[in-house]
Image (cartoon, rainbow, N blue to C red; front, side, top):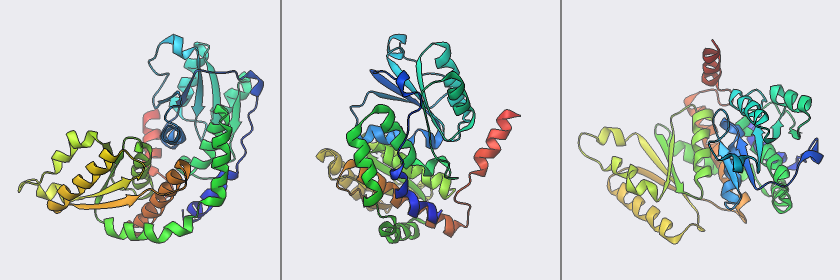
Length: 322
């Protein structure tokens, strides 16, 4: 995993090639269908460009939206392996409805069907890594489909800008601090994709429970679950709160974070601020996710757990096919 983290910036050198590009036209909406690590690039893209008319669907079939919108949409089927059953199901549903589709994968059934049906697709290189580690490849592919040349250039520059080694020491220190606790990651709603990615890295890399939520909504419900009482004290003491702070957040959100930190410290809860930094949104997002990689990596060493494979997911897949 350490090698994967250190090599991550190289993924932004990938130059996706669209096969059957002549079949693409202009679309009013994009619907990205993917599960697990295969939809994360769309989540990140929404963070970077919130005005983008993109719908993210993490389920079987197609989203429950009017046919008038579906007909004006490009359904982007994202499956790193190419064998994700929810994505394959969506492909068949879209094909049946004669909705425009696009495939992104390294191979598998999805690419086989794309080639057979002569639909547009991008075949990513197989780096022999888990989907959650391939975020550079998938976001470059997604940007190529959408045709945002400005962001494509910015993302390519990340191969030179990102410095994983520079973040390793900080990541190791955070891992030492939160070892033995269940992390809860809080961010602004704008940065929800970053908080969600941190959670996933703890789940899949460190094999520990982790949760996330966003401001200001959490101030209206979740935080009250940590208003310490004698009989609930032992429950709350198991958590460690990580606040992802962004200087570009709404000033009222920043104030909410500061006040929550004060309230939680008053109740002797563990809480830590982690600043998002970077010259632009892309750098900010991926620097933070690299830091999360280091934290989850060093936690996996402390817990002595497998940090790349996800055996429980594989076990689950076998059982649902049985």
